[in-house]
Length: 341
Image (tube, rainbow, N blue to C red; front, side, top):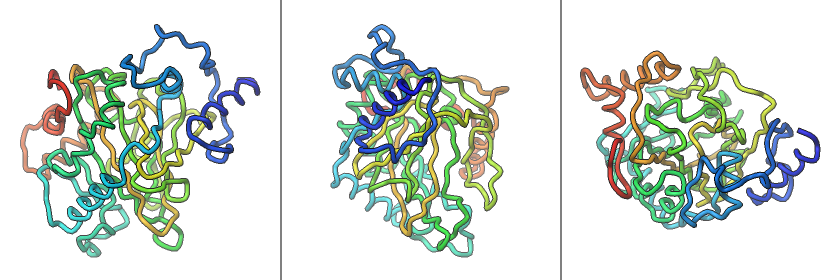
């Protein structure tokens, strides 16, 4: 990419993210990226026509694989989600199917029920209060731009990234390696899946914001596995084993209520939390109810499939459970009809 095109692309990214300088952009640029002006409506592959997204927003997502909507979720809703998360951490409520995860650095002997020992809760589809996030009209309005009108909420998380500064644990286990979310999902097509990820407070590079590699949603699903990190890696934190280090990287600085929507093939991760406090975000992966399950045996997803099935079987005492069973239980229709998933 020549300097003029690289400069133009950087300007578009900065304008979308509301930045005043290139401070959140790593100075490497994706090669072979076309100009936004080259788009024609018939070329849209990743967004649907429903008069919600502007033409510029559609072009941005098509080209980059993510889109930030500022101030989408209210402070009041975020406070309710925070309150419910704290109740779960104190074990005042125990929703069916919920997974409560601790950071790998927290020993079992140190466990006292509080938000200070919980790094993430996922599969909160049976928690009425947290699951409200997945059916907020302001969220679904945008989700429908990527999935169509029949929408399934497939995977839910509230992330409580723990402090990981040198003065706290300093083991860098709060990092999430670069990965593609499709690695975890046994359903397709990928273009009918989208993640909504909402900041529950100000998030920047200091407390471990998301980092995305623009345009990588156009590539294939890559093999993933646990990275060989000193200090350990959290369960299910698989990472890409091979990626182009010359790709542009964008660090998403977000305010409370800002929401990023991104494609499941977009390569992304997050840095460690170098602050003294916890960093919270809530998210849901949505899919078109017309999506279909695939057999991942013999594919690069087989490793995570076995890990998920073994974990669920051990936790709930199930026998002969399949990956499809796990995802069928997780999925909930939030708009329209439940069709395949």
